[in-house]
Length: 331
Image (cartoon, rainbow, N blue to C red; front, side):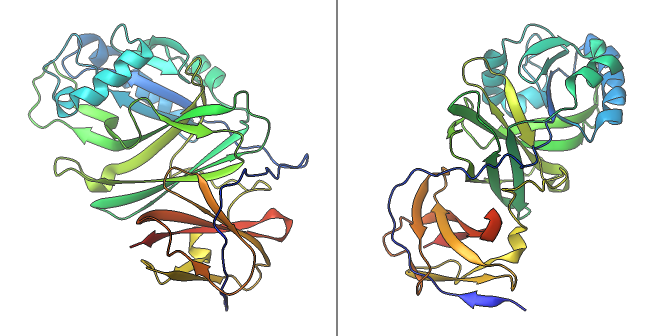
């Protein structure tokens, strides 16, 4: 049985105060591997199967995405499907050959050189940053990327990349000298191709995105990969997908299904339905960029008359720092 609360909100700009405690569990660090490959590439055909075979033994610790730079093979159909996105990321990474793997945006080597020892070296450990991805919808997908910091960030600013990925893709009728089976294929960026700037001094923020599944993609194979880089050296701090194990640290948010905002969409006011055991202490609302636009004290109801039309995230904080959240739309 849930209780229904109504609140009022005074909307103003503020700086979020982190709630990190010395006892907090640290998030798992996932290795982020970016493969640059091409379909008509003989070296790719020879090296990539072994790479993906070894990768399968580390699937719970690695996030992998495949880009198709179109050089020296502009006939690659996956490259042709999104030339601008593939070229932009090729240029950012300083791509030099196929098949090339970048490990956490840093070290690079051929896919055939990604030995078991290299996978073991790349995986394991913890990160100060938790990247949580939630997706709703099928042909039109709404995406919420939650970023939580649990320790002092090496920098104050990060770059968030959010990419739509097709898990398995087969090129029907491919020539015999082409690679026809492809894994974790980059399809499009939801973020800027150069990444969206995020404030890593903000201990808890959510950025919202949306995309439409192209008719040429298999919507059952689509998912989002999000990662955050150091803007100074491109090092990937951590990454996330909806398939990851839940993190249960001190600041971890509870399941989105545990809180309901209604009416949704709304014009003037919204109310909140919370779990029976949730003792509310504060409400925050962020816009689509993750910027905190308001904080509320417990009162009557949330007034959103002055909000611009769009998608917002509501984060409710309870005792001991427990949190629940949901999204709503202002019409």
